[in-house]
Every structure is written in structure tokens, then in C-alpha cells.
Amino acid sequence: MVNFADVLIDESKKKNSVLVVGLDPDVKFLPDCLLKNVDYSSNESISDAIYEFNKIIINAVADHVVAVKPQLAYYEVYGSYGIKALEKTISYARSKELIIINDAKRGDIGSTSAAYARAFLGDGAISGDMVTVNPFLGSDGYMPFIEAAQENNKGVFLLLKTSNPSSYEIQDLKLENGELLYFKLAEEIEKLACKTIGVNNYSFIGAVVGATYPEEAKRIRETLPHSIFLVPGFGAQGGKAEDLSVFFDVSGNGAVVSSSRGIIYSYMNETDDWNKTTENEMQGYINEAAIKAKEQLNEVRFSSNR
Ligand SMILES: O=c1ccn([C@@H]2O[C@H](COP(=O)(O)O)[C@@H](O)[C@H]2O)c(=O)[nH]1
Image (cartoon, rainbow, N blue to C red):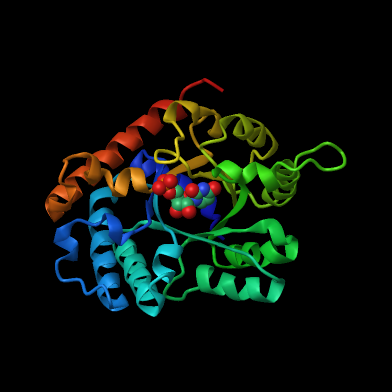
């Protein structure tokens, strides 16, 4: 039996990185070199460009990231061709021995969640190693994912305190006993996580906690010591490396931090005419941005500022 938390931590140690790069391809931001032959009336043609873009990103970051995180929305928008681009991207990332976290945020009634779990945690073409799950339908909505992850030696990240500005509207609602909703959910996750720990003391049942909420993260970390956090919101959403030490444990483990736009479109900040960036230049800028982010995170994850 493999506990996926151990796989993630071992990979993080091997790469000396807690950085996850998000694969959120938006054609608006692709330079001319990738768009010159694109027929905008064809989803197939656009999806081919997306796959080429993803290969450049993967080549640039593979040595410096613990995982890549495709965001499903950017593929689903192009229908079956977008899904094909996702399949090819996953297969390419696997050829570079990368861990794949599908940011799909699924969750439904039990029977449908079981089908989603087969899609994302089974052995199909869009299956990764971990998937983000929306737990707000309740335990029959998220347990099928946890069961599939356990059966297939994979992992999940349950949404807990998301990085967006309005996350407080629902997630911070006060319950009758004065407790906050996300905090109650953290307690529920811990009940499952503490029973499913691996050799590093972490469970394959992780939680999403936004980089934009370090104060909240500090309390969540105490309540949920056995879950690895997936931390989005670093970079483009304003989350800063210097605020992130509270997400980690004393050994610098316990969290992986994702950045999408801040890294994959880093070439847009390098010249006034970013449209003219070549594929080689793109790869270079993305590589530099990933190394910089990795180093910033390494500086804070071992710091004692908790
Ligand atoms: O709480 C959450 C959960 C998921 N996300 C996703 O992460 C990336 C963030 O992209 P950036 O460009 O680094 O801001 C994106 O795919 C979101 O859907 C999140 O931001 N917050």
C-alpha cells in the first residue's frame, strides 16, 4: 500500500521544491510563434496550440516542480479537442515523471462522485495522481473520491478555505456554536486524515488553503496536522512567499504551493512586444520564473516564523 502523501513528500525532497505549476492555457496570452497557423474557428487547431504551449511549460519547469496542475476549465472550453489536449498534456507530463494534480473541483451525489472518481483517479486517459474535490455536498459527495484514492494509491485535495476574495461569504459562515464553517470542515477532514497517515505522518487526504489567507492557515494547520495543503493564490492573486511559512510544518513539509499565471505567462513581463517572444525565449523565461518561485518558497518553508 502506497500512501500518496509519501510520494508527494519524497518527490518534494528529491526536487528540493514545493512548487506546483498550474497549466491554465489561455490563447489570449500566447505569442505569435504558437498562433501563426491557428484557425480560430477550429477547436482542434486551438487545442493543438495549447498542447504545444504546455510542452514548452513542462520542459521549462520539470526539474523544479513537485507537480503540475492542469486546470480543467481551460480544456473543457474546447470540447473533445480540449480534452484531447489535456490527455496529451498528462501523457507528456508523465513522460517527464511529473506528478499530476487535476484541478477539477468535482463533487456530486454519491453515484456521480464515484463516476468522477473513476475519471480522475482511475486509469483512464485524463486520470492524474490527485484531484481537487468540492466537499460542500457532504460526505457522500467526497467519500467516493477518498475511497478511489485509497484503492488506487492516489490522493485528493478537498477545498477548505479557497483563495478567492469572496470565499468568506460561504466558507466563513458562523455555525450555531460560533465555529466557522471551514473550521468545522477542517475538523471533519482531520478525523479521516489521522486514520490514513503514511510514514511521513501525512494522509493522502489533503486540503486546499489559499495563499491569500495566512492568518486562517495558521489555525487550520493546528487543527489539521495530517493533511498536506495545496496552496493556490501565490503570485498573480497577491499571495506572497514571506507570508507562507505558517502553511508548513517544522520540517518544511506539509504544503505544496501553486502558481499558474505568474509563471506560465512570465514572458509577458519581459518585453513590450511579448507577442514576438520565440519558443526558446518563452522556455527560458518560464524556467527562470519557476526557479525564482521555488527558491522564494524554500527560503520561507524552513523559517521559524510561525
Ligand atoms: O482556492 C483556489 C483553488 C483553486 N485555484 C486555482 O488555482 C489556479 C490559480 O491560478 P493563478 O494564475 O496562480 O492565480 C487557477 O487554476 C484557479 O482555478 C485558486 O486560484 N484558488
